[in-house]
Length: 621
Image 1 (spheres, rainbow, N blue to C red):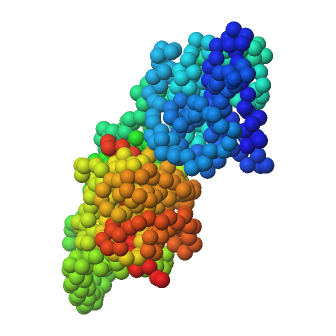
Image 2: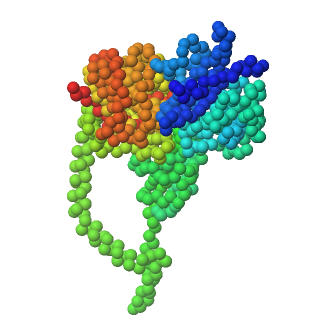
Image 3: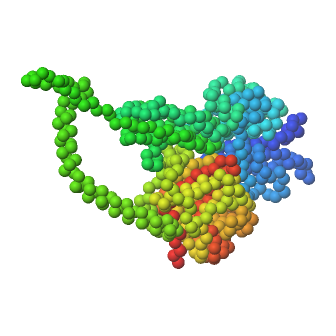
């Protein structure tokens, strides 16, 4: 509190003929080795009964762990409706605030850069602010405070393509600024300093290179940056996946090439498909050269993804022929003369002798091959009987797939994307079956279009593709795959693969009913974090009591119910659990719902998720 009071000052410019205006700022404060991000809004509050001037200073303080789930600072300063405009009490720390409106702003997009387009004539000039040196000053007499914040917000969102190695939302919090410098300000607090000429601080903080904010121009940009600034995000679109050869002899090199567009530039993942099993290949660009496929045929497919969506290419098939062998030739010679053999350049003179030896071995192998074929036939018949039983009772298989000690299961997981990139499941196999009972699929607060779920019998895994705007606020909108349970249970599942849409959520849930406003608890992933969400009563606002940075996939999730007490936890290995909190909810003892919940943050794009190692045993008392 004492540190915040150092920022509580306001120059009443009307006393010297100037104009009163609110001041918005973003600072980074170090307190005993811990960094905090402080957003401040300070405004004039008129005169009190003694004729003294007054002002209101409202501050929001964030830790580095919290900022990823929220929008960038200028968006909060410009659009959050919770800023206090009047305050009759003593200074105090506000508690029990409702942050739903703040979280909801995270889905707000500031591209294309329409304000830069309107002010400067070209949206690309938004990169000019990013190019300005640290500590630069800008004259803003010709711009409203709201316009200044919009310009800064658009420039910070352009970081997504200017500095693609980092999460632009987290990086944006390191760009400190103020919309109007005051005489008591420490200039080292701000990277960008806006100056009004009617403020006495203008002459003190003006630098030799000070210019109008509206006069900023970018000096360098790429084609991707131009498209991002002018048109905004665009999901990937494939033109075609092609190969320079489709029928080759074994040992021949192949070149595969795919053309795709999208903004930001999509990341490419290559897959080789054999017997419906996808295997990821090295390479992230649009071309793979000198590929040497082996076998008799191979199929290839590509996935492209960016922050706006993902798409799969057409499948390219390549037939592979065995190397051609040319038999040895002999010349006819007159009687009594020794024949001469004529051999092609690549032919082995001892090929005929070797062939005879191989034929003799094949004859000796015949009884053994007959015995082997008999054994294979018996195993195939046994497997057929097993899968018939499995298909008739899929729910039992799911229940037995993993136990409370399921961390030591050997279930195979899909290939993982490289660290720091969205997790995209491989192309869906063709031998999946439909959802087994007692599992059901339903869309909560959204229609069924663009949602699906299939069940992988081999890996005992649920593959979801769903959408919806959010699991948040007073009413939810998401895709739910669930079953009805009773009494106390412990719900385990492993999230082994997913793609990371900007505002998506995917995890496990216990829910009172399918009503969008029903009470629930949810633990899952969103924007690189583990979230523990809850709605305690029907139609109440959701609360987010705890969130932590996410470990690398796969991640184990757990919800435990004991009467009306619900607790959530997650684990990186299935053995060491991190508790996320406990809450009390009046949930019915009979026929409440447990299952997998996913939403993409929008009704236009779906999010994928794969859940396996599922178990719903009764809770031990």
